[in-house]
Amino acid sequence: MDIYVEHIEQLLLFLIFMLGASAGSFYNVCIYRIPKKESIVTPGSSCPFCKKKIPFYLNIPVLSYFILQGKCKYCKHPFSLRYPIVEALTGVILVALYLKFGYSITTIFWFVFISILIIISFIDIDYQIIPDIFSLPGIIIFATAPLFVPDISVIDSILGILLGGGSLYFISITYYIIKKTEGMGGGDIKLLAMIGAAIGWKGVIVTVFIGSLTGTIAGIIIMISSRIIDIKLKIPFGPYLSIGAVIYIFFGQALIKWYLTNTII
Ligand SMILES: [Zn+2]
Image (cartoon, rainbow, N blue to C red; front, side, top):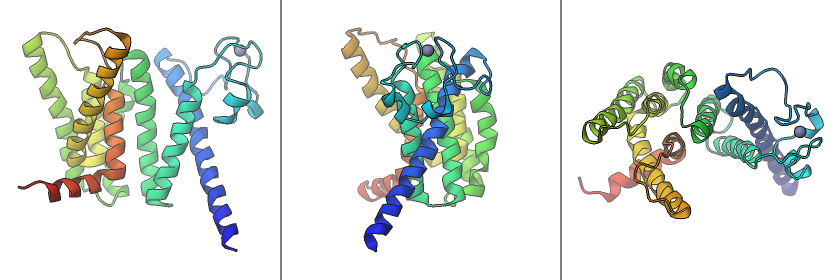
């Protein structure tokens, strides 16, 4: 009997993964088309090279990529590995949220929020821009976090917006005064204000810390691997802020507790 229950649970997790991955498939369309100002609704999925429509049975998230060996069925043009990665990432996020928050409005809220972070991050990687179309309405939309997330109060959220927008603004102004060039894009400031709205002011502190740490490590790895030592190397900051925010959603409470018990105040 128990073995059946186990199988049913595994099947459920697989279905949740596929649901998330299907959403990820749509985010690929958003990442590809929004910066080009194309419609995300029409036309349906098609090969970006030969423009042939991709039939529904070849549009299964993650799996189709491997069945077709990463190539278009018609023109054989290779597809980027990025497509299944975005799909799998979105699927894994939904499974992880389900395991942490169960069937709840909190899971749905965080899934919408992290989905926006995924789209923003990959657009930032490709174009070094964070479209205002997400971050500005996002500040208002995600300020509803206190309605959906038990740990976040209205004050947390408001202070999160002010601290998120304010701190990066302060850093970029200081950087400008010292270096006379823009170091951080305005897009990052609006993104961190949006993140602050959703996860509150404590979340902003953790996000900036983790974002700077992972961003610096990634920057060093990129410089070493490309053999270009350039201190002005442009590294999109959006993905690292997003990583920080996601880590805070899953481990924030534990991190703060650990920090408070391991530091002498
Ligand atoms: Zn094609």
